[in-house]
Image 1: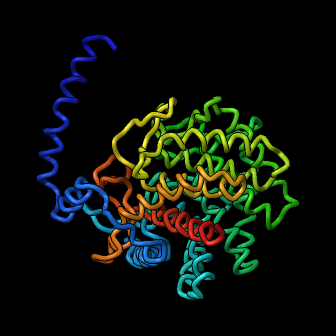
Image 2: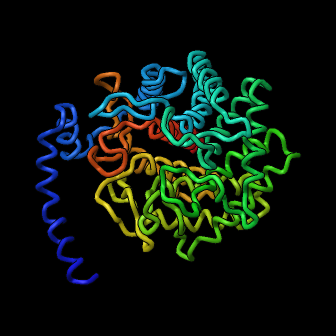
Image 3: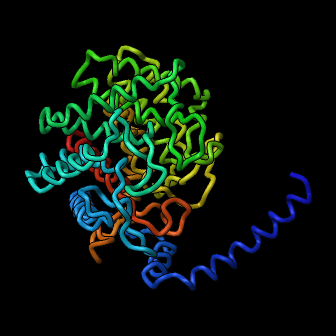
Length: 404
């Protein structure tokens, strides 16, 4: 970097602590209290899996009921600065299977009916060609987006499996649209989100997972083959040390653990869908092993990582942490490697110790974007997808430990 460019950076970096101090004084009292609490460290006691899951399910109920758009979808987040957001179609889609699974486990018909209301709303906003919009409801431009459609497809497939053919036409349209829009090399490029950097995205293996779920219900339409073609393209972006190129919303040189978790889950789902094709398992193991070395002794997983598997930030992306933990538990089930289980348990416990099982309903059981709460992912927000992945990872831990 030339000196004339480097000096402003020094000045900017030197002023950052002062700006944060000024900004802190302007925060609402609830936000100030959350910063102070988080900066003092995580709680010493893990509340336990059942307490944590129950609290987070109740938070998701609250997020559906208090969504600013009041439409049956789930509010994107609760902000300590601005309150409840409008519903978020993308994440509402993959919250659906979590609620269905928990409804079965708990005999909780309220959760089941909530999932159905989410599905009915999603069907009502589907584009005629099969795609779904990016962003929260009401956000513009309103255009069909590959990634968001894939996440909603996961929910539609769960809806068909649970409720029957009422949701099959919407599932079929979404899956056909995704499969037909895949480029020859296996990358989706035609319908990018307008709310992130426009480039190739290897984490769209999580979109391929949606196609795999649909293919399990209707295997004759070629959706599975299209999904595996995309995952092959994605793992062609992988380095020998497991690193995934093109794997972030905005900063591919230091991706979020959230998007790395997306990539890993999609690869592992491809491995389970086509276990005879060992390339998927091998790629998943490489990525999972790279992430293993990044976990601190307390279970903290840095929110962004470099290509050398070094921390790039001093905060934790709680969503990414539990996504990765879930994937390690899947690999423990598939390989029997105890290091995957041990790392997952440490990470899950770390995240549970950041979740408050008491307090006001808008934060009780909610999972923050970052820990500390003023980190740079979902700053001062409790995110609906963080709660979803948190529930899933804790539930899988309970199942794994019940069999251990």
